[in-house]
Length: 397
Image 1 (spheres, rainbow, N blue to C red):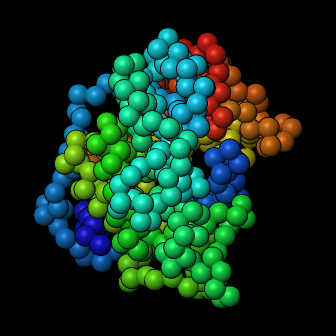
Image 2: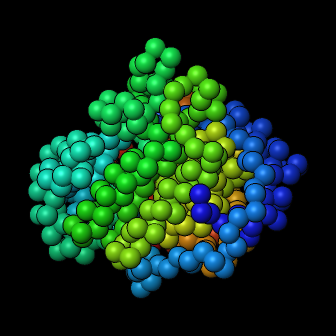
């Protein structure tokens, strides 16, 4: 992949040494993620020693196509909400507060395109649904309410495409499609057809009027390094990290000329540990080719010991502050390539963590997270609630 390597040799040596990084790796091995976001434990990989590559000055520097955009403060909106009755109350929430954006599923966690597209290129691999019955009407509504529209596209977790085109997925020894513990399948990040399909959808979203494309699940399945040898799939000589970073670079180069920003959701842990070779995520390499990076730093995602907290979910301010400190350190040497930091924060109660490990989240807990971000110099954020039921009375300033 045509990625920047030489400029980060020194950073690599710093990030993969002993001491604090080793301790972070130990913590990550016992960490768990919450079911609301549909994730499991991240097992950090040991990144391969980079080979000499193209010099940084020979690589086009990314440029924010929307430099005058005000700080974005948004909420997650499912396609069902966007195309249903709940949208009225969500519009009211944004109208009456300092919120100004919605992140709307255009390709959901199952892999369905969420509106009835008629584009032949998309229909070849994609499967559209009518969750959003009239996408043009939705875009008109968002513009009327002065809402900054972000199109969320779930990339490599795609059960629908895996079933439709098994050759684009990972096959087990008996020829069946591999599934994770939740019955979900991934498509193969090595396949150019998968890249082009998702970018074609992003291009259509840009034409529809979305100002930003947010790619989620830009990675291999959790624990992939433990099962890769038993699965059948096409691959190149590139590492998983370089393959994922290559997709992000390719997407940015394709979409930036259209005037839309490119953002990527990434594990919050990724800022605190060395590159996760197993799933192919490197925080710095991905950040180098996006306009916005959105680490998922929900306090419920961190286990005992993170940021010196016995129960991180019960300490929203301290947990968010610690996550942002690590993020700033991780991106300290990226220079002009540093993206906007716009984290996902928590507006849900993680009761599954068990008694003593969680608290009920509401106005105070959401505001504590926002204050932690402000205190760390971060003024953009996105609120996650899987059911789109957001806490009333929050001061979003």
